[in-house]
Image (cartoon, rainbow over all chains, first blue to last red):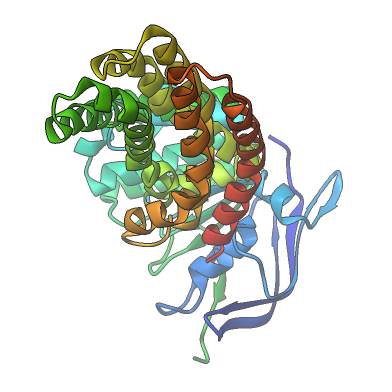
Length: 207
Length: 219
């Protein structure tokens, strides 16, 4: 996993359906830091995450991923350094959790220890049960496991704690803490306190 | 990485509830129904065989095409796949290949049996099989463009055939035409035209489909 020194966002503007979600947003997230995005529904948290991942083009401004190799501003290249957790869990009902993780590990070209990752999110016992039978919380755990398998320096999380029980939240926070401990960056959109030391950015406060 | 996506798509298509068996069953069912409607005039059946089988094969392939990108789009998989080292054009090409391997290829392999059922002579059966083997990759490829364009539309599956069927007219014309020519004992360039169409369609459509996926992800 290549390390990233910091993520530099300058004058970022996002327009969705002729509505300005945010304008001239500038901030910086350092390696080893957690940033929690806050704000009411529709404030643009998910859109900001999608822009940072390079999935959604920004209407203006730049996102630079600065590492030892210099600043990377290309959206596609940035996407190759990002692990994504969206509000859909990317769990195929026909596949088992192990198959889902094996697929993403091979797709991303990583050699993650699938069994260890499954155990770390508490899914070891149902690793071979089709995802169609999993509960919403179990699917969220699988999505968290996918972050670990991706072995990417920047984690972009959209509501990572939703539908998780107390044990699941603890494991999620352990994952996040483990990631930033090794210099990773975590940016998470949440409606509730993350429960880890984090910087805060509030969107849509004036709306 | 390419292998992972190919293998997964094939596995999803062939596992319980997958689309591969469905397309094959649809193809066989249509081919069986037509003689029941047309009657037992063997000469007539032989004349319409190529057209009927080609149209049935195209419709059977379209049956599973609407979910090509939509299933991954709806459950969030496509976001994660888009952030993989593969470009969206490569993703589209791999998905086209997986779709052909799980529908176009089985349909082609079943077609000689159905050709015989329609009373086609051996050499025409051979041409039919060859024409499907050549033309079905174009069906998957052209269909993928439509599938990528309609993936964010709720009932996209209903619009998809309207977009794609006109584009597939050349495949049906040359594919069925080659079989007709063989029946009449004529030599024709239909198979070559079909091959040319298939090559162009298969080479260009991953770019169009990839661009459409990018558009929908940003939508």
